[in-house]
Length: 204
Picture 1 (cartoon, rainbow, N blue to C red):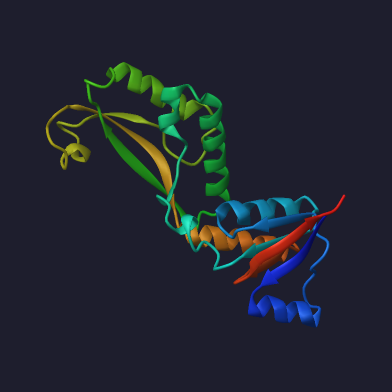
Picture 2: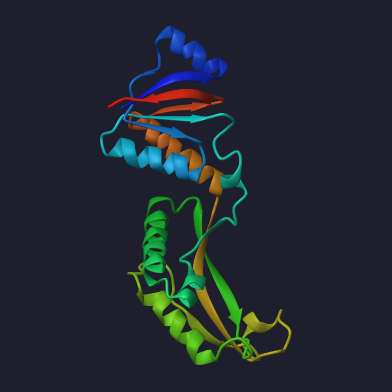
């Protein structure tokens, strides 16, 4: 159990004085209201734990609003034989696309083949793994392109005729954080923004 013994934030302090917020004890105290913090709070409270999240600024105020906006399957990690990592990323991409299609949209990426880096057959093999390491229900699979004749090759310099197209997703990252936090709160988590943790004590 974790007892919160110090927070700083006008609204939080006022609610604490009025007895409107549980301050002690909690099973889990999450410090930071980015996507990791909000996701952990949502998952934990969904498992029946008592949770408090504190964020000294606002939700998604920092790293989680400066992201690439991509929910990707980790294609580049195949080069390092991180098959399990890619599988987990692909599964999570499917889950998120199913849960939040209103803020996540599919994207198609064109990858021109550079013969000086790796052979085309190896790229195609990697993309085959990318398509089949995890079940794929919502996104189209990879495709080989003739960039000399395909309209998708028109904006590119005529360095190569061979290209590949694959799927990933883009997301409104800040809104994803807020939706996770709101759902955590609806399930019983205490979410305090504008609140800096100044002290906590672990018990038991």
